[in-house]
Image 1: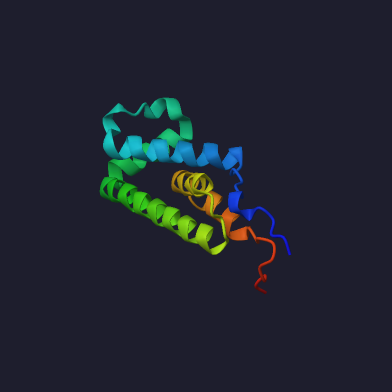
Image 2: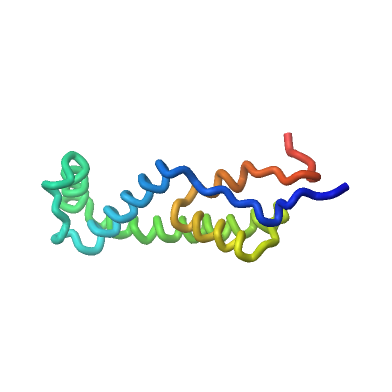
Length: 124
């Protein structure tokens, strides 16, 4: 039985999640490392929330950035494992999954988890 070409399976996460996660990561990085340079007044309610965290919970904000980074690294490693488990053998495709999962986290990893290659038994 011929196997479908699951070795090059890749799906891009939705633009909505890409924008949302990118804005969050940029704002979190900016407030954690350069809090004096953030134009809080121009960011509306999001700026007020960010200013509150900088003023009253800065250690959690700063340490949370490193936790976020570690979580994204772990998710990227899980993406590598899932690529192997699901028979995705193309190096470039694996790198795409790893990079996308590192940048956008679970929004990418969930797409990879849902993938069921042909010819493999599906879990129930």
